[in-house]
Amino acid sequence: MLHTLSHSPWQCDFAALLRTLNAGDDLLLIQDGVLAGIEGGRFLELLLTAPISLYALNDDIEARGLSAQFSNSIDRVGYTHFVSLTVKHRNQIAW
Image (cartoon, rainbow, N blue to C red; front, side, top):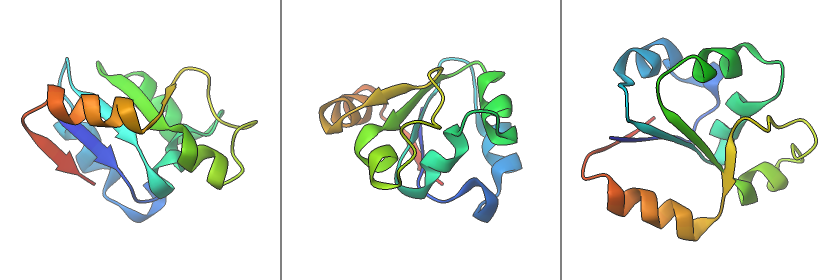
C-alpha cells in the first residue's frame, strides 16, 4: 500500500498513520508532510522504526527550505518516481 502524507505531522492523526503501516508499504512525504523528515525530529524517529520504505518529494523539501535539515535516511524523489509508486500500489491512503 502507498501512503502519502501531505499534512504537517502536527496537524494529522500521526498515531493512526503509524498503526496502519505494514511491512512492505511505502510512505511518500509530500507538501507539508515533508516536515516529518526533519533530522532529529520525533516524527522521523517513529518513521524510521516502521517496516516501510520512506520517500519524500524533493521539490517540496526545497520549496520549504528544508534541504539542509532533511534526513538522509529518506530517499528524495521526483515526480517520475511519485508516479511509479502510484502504479506499483493498487491501494493508496492519503493522510
